[in-house]
Amino acid sequence: MAKYPRVREQHIAVFGESGSGKTVLVSSFFGPTQEGSYKNDLWDLLALQTGQGHRLYQNYLGMRDDATTPLPTRFNNTTYEFSVKLKNGSPEEAKKRPFDELRLAWHDYPGEWFTEDPSTAEERSRRTETWLTLLRSDVALLLVDGQKLLDYQGEEERYLKSLLGNFRQNVLRIKDDLLAENGPLVEFPRIWILALSKSDLFPDWGVDTFRDLVILKAADDLGRLRSAIGEIVQTPEALSIGEDFVLLSSAKFELPTDAGEAMGIDVTKRIGLDLILPIASLLPLERRVQWQEQFDIPRKVVDSLADGADVIAAALTGAKFAGVEKLLRTLTKSNKGATLATAALPYLAAAVQAAGPKLKEMNEQARTQQNHLRATLTQFKIDLEQGISDRKLWTRK
Image 1 (cartoon, rainbow, N blue to C red):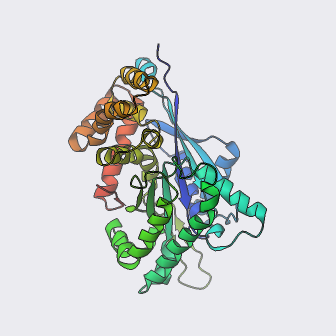
Image 2: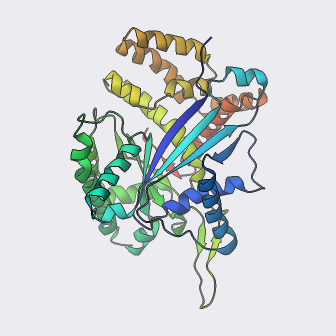
Image 3: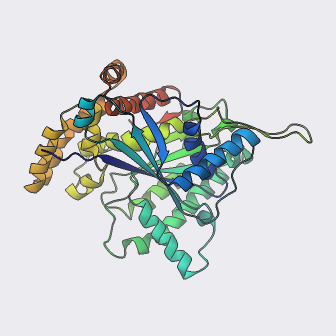
């Protein structure tokens, strides 16, 4: 009998300068799911570390009840670990599904490291170690601070060029350390999404407005960043930087208009946070299919793209995972790398191509059958489609 993986883990790395809203973002991602009024018939979101969960929920409650934002975390590289714990479906479904739990590792890169040089050899070493931790990430978010963009209104290129240039310099500084042992990296975040944090400051903007501004004002800087990252990875054509954009806002912040008036924070008005799990879970699968169809990618690179994509695809489409697993395992043992990639591609493509009315039908069927894993993943895909339709998300076609 095949042994099914019971846990799938996805990794997302969040980069942003100090003050760009990283701590507020992760607090608002987790906090609302802990409220007594929160309803989700498919899964519960848990923090794997109780202390982390308490701190994040405390941050959220401070915003909700006292209109206070969390204190900044200086020079702390933190990984937040979450579990999307599926609710009990039918016993038959629970036995057949390829995994029971989806985990999200959220890596937070210290903002001060963008703009400040390491003061000691120990700090330089810690930065390298942090990068090594982030290398497992499937997706990276590079935050563009909405407040700074507003501060530079009319000359946004000054801020965007500084942001992208600082990040490129960080990549170049760490390049030799990363390449020292084994040369160009195989495992590395290959999808870098530009995310406008504090997007509530631009209520009339769609994601296309943000994308157009970045391309108009800083296309060359984005290209230089892409080249710098391309120099440290194998198969740089399988790399997406500046091709995906998303709007994010942790809450609606209302500044006082009169002296003595308190700041207001409406935590119910969030933008884009419901797209984080779908992006981390499904976007790597979609990009892997695109890259395999377009490029001749070495097997070891293919294996590092969307790790576990076959499992995700089986769960999403309702395919019999045991049969697919047996085929792929047999090809792996025979070391037929090209055959393995060829055999898996149509199977993965079927999951990517599910869309529109067909996708909604799959979701409704899964809910009726109490197949909570398939219902969750098809709902994630519906959420991505809705995010694109609502102009909150732009992804490369």
